[in-house]
Length: 292
Image (tube, rainbow, N blue to C red; front, side):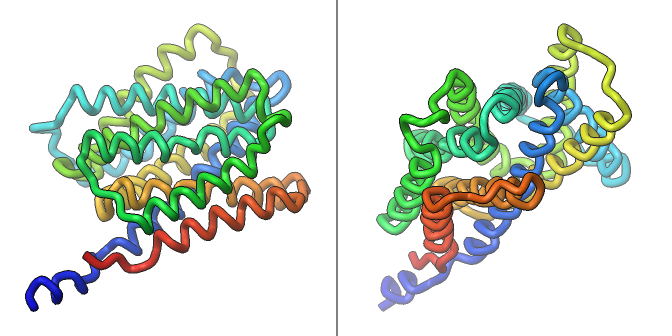
């Protein structure tokens, strides 16, 4: 009887964790859109865009930290550095791909990262993935493949850069999950953006050109949007299992498509709509209450 009652218990926070990840996805799509605007044509180098993202994000987090004064004692510095390095590599690769191929295609390819994350979650974090989660991931993955459209222009040299972004971001997600189990969110944000700023700004020195006033404004907006996305992402990872909430990151593809239509007037065709609907179906499966 006690075992049966336990099996009907709903894990608290799962739905909120998935919705937080969807919110983070909406903002991630915004950052990709801004990066594309900054990098097309004779725009800024991807490493310089990445440096602006980390610099302005650090200013926001440092301002909050000056008020909240988070303790750095006991921080897992090696894991923080590994997470920051993977994050910088992933963001830079994504920005480079977004500037050189259709935004929806670059986003679709790079956000195969949940596949990497789920495999690592099972192998490293020893998480158990139930049939419904695998169904949700499979549906979302199939939707991503529909949007990628094998054999079309998505498979160009820039697609390899987007695939590299997926690998780095998938690894970063596992490191974030490990950090959220032991450290407060503000400290994670502060250290990550501090390390990221040092790495990104050092790399940007080799490709630097002085941005225009409009470019400075977009870089600042990019950094602010990324901090908000990180905050939601960390809360999602803290409140839910990585294998459960990470697949909701596929909704970024939907937001990227909507932004293309709203800003550039790009109307998605039937194939794109089918892929988006499949991804949304996967997300809806994820937000169902989980019984254990």
